Every structure is written in structure tokens, then in C-alpha cells.
Image 1 (spheres, rainbow, N blue to C red):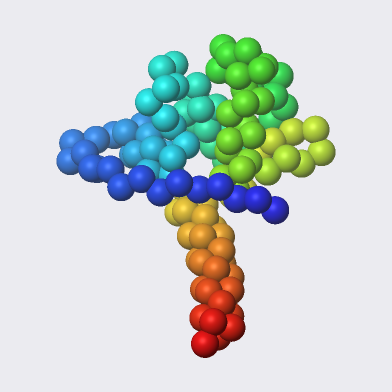
Image 2: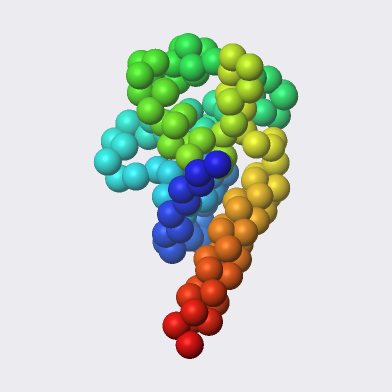
Amino acid sequence: MIRRVTIIKTRHKVNRNINDDLKWIGTSLGLFSLRDKNSSCFRIFISLLRRARERMLTSSDELAELTGLTRGTVVHHLNILMDAGIVIRENKGYILRTDRMETLVKMIRHDINSAFDEIQLVAAEIDENLG
């Protein structure tokens, strides 16, 4: 299982709304890049979040229809979200790992901590072998 998460420390706005907060979280996790002029990944993420609240799997075709994006664009961003460990594929659809944002962030933190634990163990072995 490959997880790719980029943490970007960005300033959090004082006067904000829920969309600003969701964009800030996604940007902080390296999901929503400046190159994404149409906020495609954000739109897909929001659609998946809404569907997760209803515990509904969503196909790439449905996401394309919901967001007004091409299926190719949707699949590209779904792959990014899956690589980050945010979206999982089940049967013939996609869904967020959880329907709760706080739980999602905790899961990502756990993934990152697990990766660092393994890196630290290997580093200790290297130090031991080098003397």
C-alpha cells in the first residue's frame, strides 16, 4: 500500500467559511495544487464527502457528471486521492475512508506516524551496523 502525503504549512484565514476550511485542509495535505485552475480535485473531494455522509459509493462516471468534469480528469484526481490514502475503491465505486473529517485527518496522521516509525527503525539498524 503506497501512501503519498505532502504536508504544506499554509496560513489559515481568520474570516473563513466551511469551503475555505476544506480547501485549507486539502491544500495543507498537498491535494489541491495551484496548477488546478478549475479546482477539479476540490470539487471531486466535496462530491465524495457528500456521498460518504450518505454512505454511498460513487463511480467515476457519476463523479464526472456531478462535477462537470471529464471522466479522465476525475480518474486522474481519484488516483491522487487514493495515493494519499483519502479515497478507497470498493467494488465499482469510490468512497472516502470515513465520512468524518476529523477522523480522516487522524487516519492520515496514523499513516504518517507508521511510516516514520518504520523509517526510524531502519535508521537505527543502519547506525548500529555502521558502529
